[in-house]
Image (cartoon, rainbow, N blue to C red):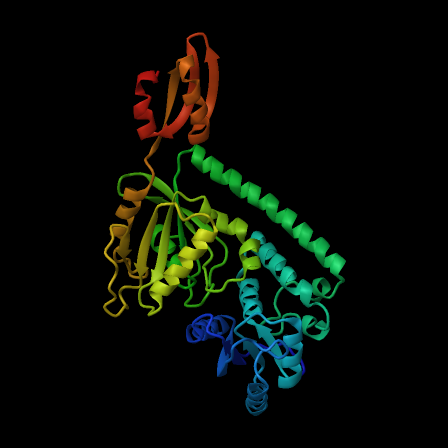
Length: 414
């Protein structure tokens, strides 16, 4: 294996993939290329093998393994990246055969996250995900784990955490989970304050690199970093936005989705993804210039479903239409075409948001007769109660509720 050293130049990478017919390997490898580019690597070669199942020992077949070994020897690649999650055995065998570092798709994504996380919460989430991934892989990986900060797949917690015993790592995982739980509670309190103040929220969700941060910047001058790379933005950002009808909403940029995102990674970033689950409306952004646009839309919808947010109002936003080749957008009142970069079509988007938002809430004082105690109880579930008092002549409520609900109770308004 090549001696480890801190590298600053672009790393040369070989991609290994197995086509079992479970998914579109060509599209997956194309996505893996972009992930490698985002991590600072350059793909020098791709080896794909069609097999009924992945080799449990060396991932690919022995013939392709020999081909990969020869390629690595002739091109002196720095790294081999497999398009599936490897077992510890597969990784060890591949490294021994190829004489170079080997990582899998999951580790590559974690590495990009480690490089991009800026907030304290984001860094904790990355560390938690990396430790959960590494815990079952500690045996026999000492050399790989000790290589901190020297290439793709090596960024993150570092050797003091990864080479300690399992009990220490489990203790660290527990500590991180508790810290993230505290941060999640703070985030929840902020959301409750927004609801109390009657400020609706719209979350921008979608595939990574669809232009979510660019859209946030265009609409709100947020100044969020934008790059033509997968997962350029990891930490969520919220900004106020005024709609054409005068209402103000909170617009939230969220972490991008990707196909075959490991379940434990979704769990680790659940507190960040809660911004999407708690929003009043979802803006499903996609890259209209991407030939796999519809497929990526379906992937995003599946993840939204996993987050139990599929019942929320949703506007499909076809972005980058200025460079799309005569893309035919499905006819729908809840779909708009825009170019976030050139600020084209955003007026139609703002109108669509206004039309799909829940009705504006208002604060009112009500005096309900005691016979409507059931209605008062229902308001505790559907409205924001500031004060409640049982008086001689009825139940007094200081409440914030939707205008539609207030119209039904207008006779009891005081």
